[in-house]
Amino acid sequence: MPVVDNIVDKLAEILGISSEILEKKIERTVKIMNYRGINYAVIREDLGGYREGTTVFLEEEKIVHGYPSIRRLAFLESVPMHMIDEIIVEEKLNGYNVRVVDADKKVLAITRGGYVCPYTTARIEKMYGDRIKEALSEYEDVVLTGEVIGTENPYVAYEYPEADGFDYFVFDVMKNGELTPLSFRDEIVGKYGLKLVPVLARIGKNELGRLREIVDELDKRGREGIVIKDPMHRVPPLKYTTIYINIKDIEEGMKYPFDEGRSYLFTRIIRLICQVYEYSLGNKELDNIALRLGRAILKPAVESLRERSMGRLVAATYRLVFPSEDDLRDYLEFLEELGVDAVVKIIGAGERGVEVELMKLKDTHGYYSKILETGYSPLD
Image (tube, rainbow, N blue to C red; front, side):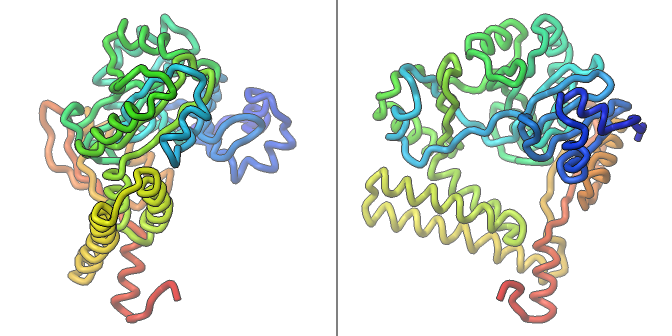
């Protein structure tokens, strides 16, 4: 990796903060990365007014602000407390947040954490590269923010018929770290033929019956939920997820109870508690949810333990398609730099690119090995 001279002074100058303050925090708060000769810094914690996930391109002295966190609603009936008048209701897609920028004359895809993901960059560049370059050339200092969805990604593999394996849907446009009016986003997306997240309704903030109908319909379809926005972004957006996805997420997380399981479990149970309360569900509906919840907790965890008892790896498996072998090498170097323990098996190469199976070993693998070996519980 090329070395950037006086990294602390350089970064402090770009961010406009004290070198002394940065010196004390840099080891824990900042990670220096490189993608194809482009040096950049990742802000891993809030620092000097910059959000976690902010990316700083060092030679270009360009700051890509972290995407602001969206507050989660416990109750739909709370919407009028937080919105001004009219609201836009968009579908919340089940994927991962990606900011797309033009840096060093390249289209780069930045994850929520602030890292340039070589795989996501390669896929988006191949699909939309020319259009995005034109858009970002016309609209200077703009950052596209959207969701990557589909089964062909190394983060949240969830099937969407409209994604055809991998796709990118814009949900916001940022400028100088601020969210811009939705009309501006729609203008860019429409002009350059990009894809927009589904916009489900434009209604008054007090139309709670309509809001409930939208969520119920998404729940029946097995979709994730909604994001509620002010058209001008005068107030922060809100998000709300369906009962279906709260239980489905627990089922996915509990495949690896010593990894995602613990963090997935409690937060989503709290969401379910609030939903059962707000919806005034009776015993029959409650029993149905309780059965689904119990199965989601136990079934995948037990299946993973059985797999380990038969000598198999407990690992998350992803199927990825790289446009080229160079893109694959970039991604493997990226994983190594982040210390991710992964195994890659090349399935084949064709018109679409290099297809691989990626396995990320989970901590649950080691915990289950010790349990099976010793018979002891690792938590008591």
